[in-house]
Structures are given as structure tokens and as C-alpha cells.
Image (cartoon, rainbow, N blue to C red; front, side, top):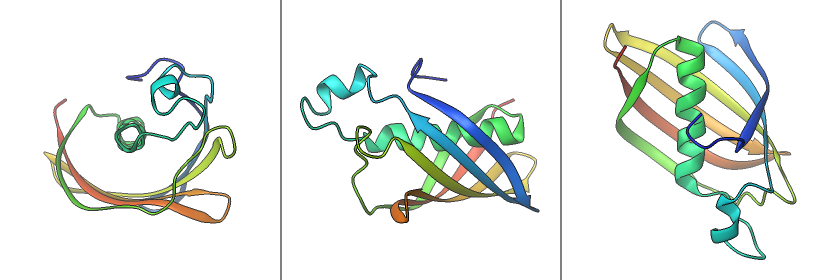
Length: 124
């Protein structure tokens, strides 16, 4: 985990074939929210992308390096004080022995917060 104590994986389950469902809890007291933004904490987009990468590493058992983003849509702000519980739907496929393709939709409650498609290079 790049940011210590930033989030907790409550569950990570293989739903069907290449589809996974993760439930995570964001630590609203994490120091990153002191600067993003004081009095009105908002989840940094880059942190969401890092969480997705870390989940993909956990699922694949490989160290990954983001190679390409083909689609990133931030659709709603995530305020960790109001909605610290997130649901991430991930579809992970291996295109060859050196790459992993990932599609993600992140939700809080029934609200879509993020849609992302990416390619990761397997580094080990």
C-alpha cells in the first residue's frame, strides 16, 4: 500500500470469471485530506487510480506499472466523511504474459464515482 492506513479492503471476491468485486473503507482521518481540502475533504483522483492498481496487483499476484489509460471519467466527488464505503467492480484480463487490461467502475451507495479503463505492464 503506497499510502499507509489510507484505506482498508473489507472484501475482495471473484464474482465470475474475470470479474471481481471489492468493498473498501476510506480512512477519513488520513493526513492526505488535510490538504485536499481542509474542511471539505475530497478523494484525490490519483489516489483512486492507485487503489485500483493495488487491487489489480492483489488479484493478479504481480507487480504492475500503469502503461496506458484509455478512458477515465470522474463522475462524482467522493467525500470520505459522508461516504467512506466504496464498491469497486473490476474486470481484469491478461492480454499476454506482459500486460493486464482492467476496466473499473467505482461506486458509493448507488452513485457512480469513477469509470476507468487501463493497461498495466507486468513488472514481476
